[in-house]
Length: 494
Image (tube, rainbow, N blue to C red; front, side):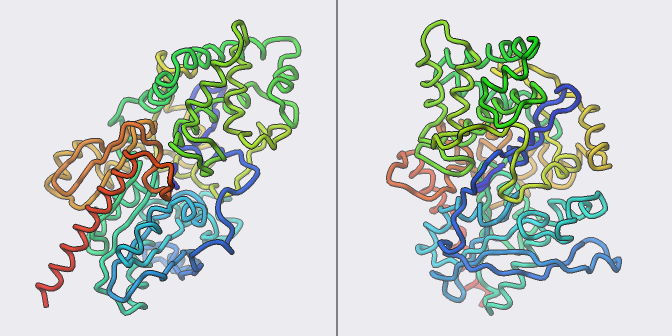
């Protein structure tokens, strides 16, 4: 997704004997996949283009005028001059991946006769200002920020409209996960460019202690508990068994054998994070139908995991049950002969999120005793030290709320913002950091009880449940209203 989103869109980094969480943002920096899940370029309905983008939009120093090629995808099949332009605000990964997982925009393009544009986020995918050296130092990574990305989108959209001789075309931005955050922020920062935004699974309140720190992992735990109380208890007990195995004389070799690793494990934390990753990501993508976003999975995979756990005979090891359930996420196809626990791959150009999490995207988390995961307290000092060690930068935990707001959002946006849809599914752990109530008549919260991470942005299928169809119908109706009002206002100006 991300259409992540996304984010998508958890950054699994272990700080000093795992005193700090696998936290940062959704997932993407630790994805362990052997195959890309996006469509091949030959199957894509999009034309790939590149836009000469300035390195720095906010200073006038000579080096700020360095130009890099920003990738974007475009589909003009249904568009006519003057018609609306639907723009996906790309998030932390290669844009083809998000385009192939955001079928909702393609599904509704014929109705609106819309031009579709997917813009890749700077420093991700092919849009790397310094090539292979883009992520090497803080000097180059310093140009990676949400503010620069939003400015990229604004400049590219203006240029595109001018080149198409269609400057009066209304623009609606779409995004999921981090991309959804960017879509909402784009509408607030550039209301003269986008008439509205659909921000799906956008945890814009997951900053600056606006929501409880334990909310993310509590939500995942609730998902599994709703599927099966026994399943929840087994996973919760499995961590003690994992610790017990690791303290044995030949604990790590035994653990390597139990987890069918391709190479011998060097740390218990690799096994722990592998298990946690499976449960976290499966809760995020607990879609009603089969999907292939984060990994190939059946419909409602949380329930399927719990069926695996509950199907074990009485007296079975909790750790064996947890491993079998996690294998659904990593090996649903059954093709994996062994698992790479300590050498994750990055098939979607995701490298870069760690830096963002260490600068502006500071999303503190903790794990309560009530969750099914090992409890921990938020250790900001350890996090800061890790960021200094890895990138040479200190996090700015209050910057996002300073730049975009978030505190008292209902009161602020009620008088200031307009034309934003915040869509969330309550089974998505990121939903607890999202906007779940209407703020005004034009800032709408669409909330579904069983929805997962930006499920509404996925392509429609025959197996979609009625609640998902209804959510999309509402989104289409709202976007249609925005566009109709825009054209009416445009006509009155003539």
